[in-house]
Length: 459
Figure 1 (cartoon, rainbow, N blue to C red):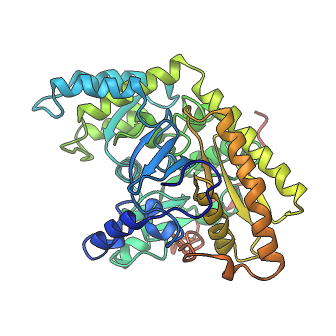
Figure 2 (cartoon, rainbow, N blue to C red):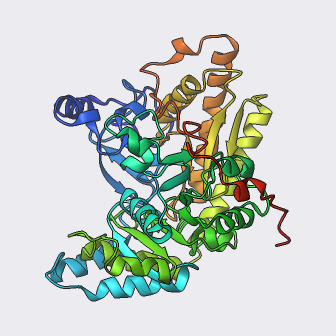
């Protein structure tokens, strides 16, 4: 009988999953379209590799094993798998058609909703992936400012301008690499080191898991304005999750441009670029950003239904409450077990489990904990990404699973038995490095920028 969401006598049988993996291995590079969902991010030999359906907060793999999902498709599924309101909207639109030869009214309807909710959304454009809209935002900033350089912080997709600052940058011309630089999150001094008269924009993820210092964003915005650089928020994770208006509403700061995807359509592929009217107007003609599927109607219908449901319910407050319960509950368990090297960090909407690398091999510790949670019917990759379909009893079950699994991890670390505790292969890192590649422009720093000192904001 397949494993279920309970303590199982053994790890799940994944024979069918492995068969599909065998078929994919020499056909699909990396055997996945999304790295975070790929086999390297789960313990090979123990974890499933293929899922075939989901409902609410649960998924079933191709072998029939059931899991409580703490990944939720790496973020997009905010209402839960198979949400009836969103699925009904998709079915209704499907009867009328998917893509057409002219503009569809849904493009206006969804744009109007985003304009009402997102503080900086004076104008709105749609695409399909997060990388598309972050790249469009960078191109817009370059066109608007007449400058070339980009300063970034976080993950922004696979396109050349960003991936050049990671160690997966083969195929990116050196000239392109020389135009993008990085700064450290919540470190304005490192940003000042990057700024000069040719920086078109500063783009960052407002929050991943680290909580910024008070007034960080207001001071960041002041730096950008003084330097004549546009401020861009990559709100793939924060948009329609941290607040209906995203991080800019939550932190009371309005960037020049902002990019969204993930939670806006409960799993359907859509991305959104918003921003100042004078900047966005360049997309009328001067900056080319058009695509065949930008106005695809099933995703727009899903976005309309998702936004309407988020507005009409307390879903975001509910998710935050569950997130606090899980984050704080795990912290209490770790303290009780005398495991100060394990922490759950981040704002309630999305937390991450971390391990002190001075105490243990963090990737190996994560692998063992994942293995033991899988045995207990939990699909976990280090994050707690919750949805409106999760319940209080789900959170209580996850905390009970941590109470069972963490002593196994603690004893393995204490007895130097961590590598031998794995039934499968250690997880693979996504990137070995994602920052501190280019921290200063090659050109001399503009003297006016270097002289600026940001005083704490009174806001």
